[in-house]
Image (cartoon, rainbow over all chains, first blue to last red; front, side, top):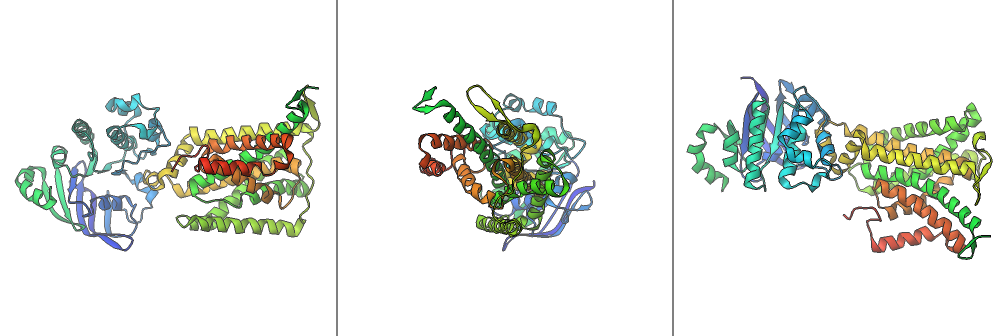
Length: 233
Length: 295
């Protein structure tokens, strides 16, 4: 299987502080991969460095064979990478529909607005409300939905289940499975590994800005004890 | 003669009209300031000088090329807007993310430079600029006599203000602008070229000032200091309305113009300070401004 995203020896800095220390990661086309790790080991930084929000970075990031380090921030999406930040980034001065329509369409495989509203009926009902009037779960749906419209090939998803009720978490899990059926590649940062085990094909465990181990979802049950220990949960 | 509160009705309406005309300029100028501040977080002290440039462009276009009022009303905002684009690309861009004081000092210096340059060539007295022939004379409204050109100023500024409001609140481009005001980085991650958006926003804000300048040329004459006379009031308008609120800037502009006009009728001595008194009260009671969101 061809690597869609190929990261080698990636280093990244927040100002003076060196956060990623030679990160290696390979994501194949159509895979859903989850990054696990304690708070502060560089999971979110990894996503922000891939998108190019963090510009002080060295090493290699190749997406579909193309070098991404030289790509300006506003061109990242056009290469096929979509980003849903941890804080969701719903705009309060835009209504739900405007939020949904905001990101420009960059690829052919985007979902139509009709399909999105079928998948997320709540958003249709509330399309004229200000974006931030939605519940946390609805905001997360909106944050995912607006990237699906753009037709990106890969979705970077930062802790989508954080702070949400179990029934909403389940709903997000169903949505991720649908995306997988559509062939979307997903890189997920997640603390909730019960949730992650239902959607992910493979896991990376991070510590101190590096990948310390990698395993397929089948090995998750055997590793539960170690993971609980390492993650301190 | 009809009297209201002991004031003859025509005198009252006359001052109301003058208030509305001043309000038209306040609205156009504070709208531009609010757009620029909202997007760029730059307090554009050069706004008055850019308004003056609009008026002078009209004057120079007429003197050197024979292009009259209507042509100038289109051309001057474009020319001054392009100058704004150049200023943003060369200078302002380097000040983003720094203390807002840097932007304020830069634009203040720019205003002094522009005004000084025009004062060097034209002195501080005003150059006459005639209203277009089509709008000469006046109309008897029955209760008062209204000069046609002044009626046009009110109509034109209303059209441009509502058009700009529509552009920002109801279009896709406006959605990009509003979103980028909240979180520019994320909008950029989505694939929108935010730096270009910032350049265009500054150009638009400056073009609005120049448009107001052309409108003002037949009313106030064309003089190098016309901008510095009005800009202080306009800053007070923006403070009252709330920085960064588009509708707030427009509505407050007209309301304060009218308040100023009415004060001229009832208590003329206070007319030149009434806006600042209102500003002081608003700052005391609602520091974010009448239409501003509490931070």
